[in-house]
Every structure is written in structure tokens, then in C-alpha cells.
Amino acid sequence: MEETEAEVAPALIAVHPHRSSVAVAVGCDLRVFDLLAGVGVTLLDDSSSSSSSSSSSFHKDSIRAIRFSANGKLFVSAGDDKTLKIWSSISWRCIFTLSSEKRISAVAISNNESYVCFADKFGVVWVVDITGFDANQPLLDKKPTPLLSHYCSIITSLEFSPDDRFILSADRDFKIRVTNFPNKPLNGAHEIQSFCLGHTEFVSCLAFFQAQEYQQHLLSGSGDSTVRLWDVSSGALLDTCEVANKAGLLESNGNGKSEEHGHAVTDLCTTLDGLLVAVAIQSLQGVALLSHNVSAQTLTLAKVVSIEGEAFVPTSLGYAPSARELWIVTGVSSLPGCSHPSFARVRVISGIDIEQEAVVLEDEKMPGGEKLLETLQGTASVDENVFLAAAEAVKAAMHNLLIKKQYPSESRESRKKTRNDRKLKQ
Image 1 (cartoon, rainbow, N blue to C red):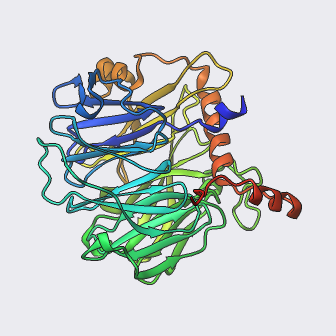
Image 2 (image 1 turned 180 degrees about the horizontal axis):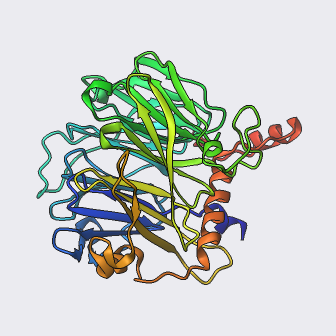
């Protein structure tokens, strides 16, 4: 059914900054594994008057964004059920749940853990003040306040700069907006620092370098099959890497674009203090590693780490700096026309290094072993026949959501008259 197909959401992964736990979201399920104790985590949510095992559906629809805070005390989940939940990653109790008028597409947590921001699918970014939160106590009387707007363009990614000076928002209209984050954000953010313009398709993901000497450099991935390097303050484009072309996925046609939009960059993360950048690309059965030359301000393809034996196309990435591990997941919330209600497969790439050869760990050698796989995947073993179907479902869903449809003028006028996205005035 078309309606079901439109609702397909990719599996997501997030790794605690100190590698104490790892979380996977697939569909409405949020699954967490405690790497220190070697057990699945029991999530608690007083707001829903229920508790459950590590594969609990505390959300009522697909989760679209998950992330840990910079020091790992907080964890946030949000999505299509128009709710955002803030969890203590110490007790794994939900300490706050808020409702949004629209579906939530992205979240960000300030590095000082004072603010949580989220974006809805109509392009509005909201901010919640959580200053002085207690991980053992629920947050009370906290209401979201509008911070900024992209004017009816779906926001695909939100990031705070490492020093919290800026909040960055990317959208499906190829733009990256750099906004000065004010001292009093509940009054709104009205000062735009710059725009990073140059992508020719939707911007899918953003990432900052954490090392002090190049914290003002930003990475972005896009549906145009490129990863770009920017100077945040000026918005200047420093370098472009046609990563899908370099990885051998498509022939260069002069602008690096794929006619079928089949090679979008879906996620990226920085490793080794920014010397290497891990990139997930639609149709790539593995991960591309880009070398970041700090002095020359360039990005070049260093290597492609292939996942052998499985048609594994990652949908989300997470990095554990202390172990130099790249955690990757592939999966979808549902597979139309398939008996599998949802699907997730987790792998770990060890030895992320410029000179060392990276190794894709076998299941029995992964941290947490079979217990981790049972918790995060829902089962220790996965039917390999669903891998390619899942990758195609994610590709189609992203295309339907983020590639703008072209309508003839008479059709556009008709659609305007039947819009239901505005509240009727009484």
C-alpha cells in the first residue's frame, strides 16, 4: 500500500560518548544495551504509566531522531508520533515528555546540556530550557518555545556548534542555516551568522569536528552524493568530495548527481578527532572513510570498508572514540508486502585508523555478543533475504519525503485550495 510505503523510517543508532551503552531505534521501538553490565536496559516512563524490556514501544509511531548529550547524561528520542522524550541515561527513566503540533524530524542538545531543540516537518525549530535538570527527577512545567523557522521546508538535521555559539539547521531545499544561539533563546534566535549554500539536492546530515583547532569547520552530506566542508562563520565552501563517485557507485556526469537519486549520503560522523570521516551512502554495502587534511582544508577518499557476506547498506552511524569503533545499523520500520514487521541489523567496525586496516567484527566478537544482538536487533540472527528489500524501502521513502515533486501549474493551484496544513480561524 502506498500509505504504508510513505511511512517507512530508517533504523537509527547512537553510542554513548563514554561507550557505556548503545541505543537503536527501529520503527516505534527504542532498544538500549548496557555495554558495561552486558545486559539489555529496562526503560522506565512514568508519563505512559508503563515499563518494559529493552525492546519497548514508548513511542506510538516511527522514531526519527535519537542522540546522547555531549557528556552522556541525557538521551533524547523523537519522531512521527509528535512527541519528544528526554531520558536520563543513568537510570534510563524518561524525565520529560512533550507534545508537538507537527511530526518531529530532528533534535539537538546544547553541549552545556541547558537546552534541547527540535525541528518539525513544517520547518520550525523549537527550544526547551532544561537548565539545572536533575537526572533523578522529572522535569516539570517545561514548554517548547519557537526559536527559528525555515518557512515550510522540512528540516533534516540540527546541530549545535561545539562551543554552543551557533545552532545549525539543514533542510530539503539544499540550505544550511547558521544562526547565532542567543543568551536568551526563549525570546527567539533572530541573528543569522551565515548560509552554507552549494548542495544541489536535500541536505541529509551535519557533523562538526570536535578538536579545538578546527571547531569552526562543518561537514554536510546530501542527496547530491557529496560530502562538503564549510567554514561556519563565513559560510564559505572549503571543499567538495564526490564521495559516491569516488567510491565507484556512479560515473561522474560533470556535477556528481545521480539521475535516480540512488546514492544519497544518509549519515556521517567524525572519527580520530576529525582526521577521518565515516560516511554512509545509499547503495554502498559498507562505509566510506574520508581523510580530512586539516592544513589544506580538503576531503579525500581514504578507503571503503566493505561488509562481506551481507547486502548491508547502513542507515545510521555512531562512533566510540575510546575504542575506535564505528557502530553501524541497517534496517527499516516496516517492509511493505513483507512478513517482517520491522528489521534491524547491527555491525561494528574496529580499528578505525588512518594507517591500520579496519576490521568488520564477526557477531561472536562484537562487544556484548549475542545478548547485544538479541537486544538491539530483536533477534540474534536476521534473515539475509530482507537486506536488499530494506535498503530499497529506505531509498524510496527518502526520495518520496525529500525530493520535491514537480506539478503542472493547474495542479499546483488545485493543491493550494485543498491544503489542510493551516488551522481554520474561528
